Image (cartoon, rainbow, N blue to C red):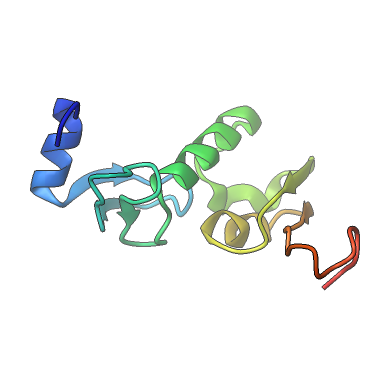
Length: 114
């Protein structure tokens, strides 16, 4: 583990770390720690969100002044997401004005619904 921070070394050694998950709103712990990419691993054991997804949820929650995305149903503003699956999408589906999209490659015409 060359050029690895102390916290990363500790997390990779312990293999469990307590967290508050801003996606599911639970006190949880992270698991499935991949020491090569902490951004795309460190899964929440309740909702399976990655560290990157929790950071997206945290930023959105802070912006719209809620504690977790499981409280998004009361939000009246518009939300656009460029993912059509996963823990962030699953929580955002509860919002009243939620729009999402996904890139499926060249086989589909841009703007087509699938």
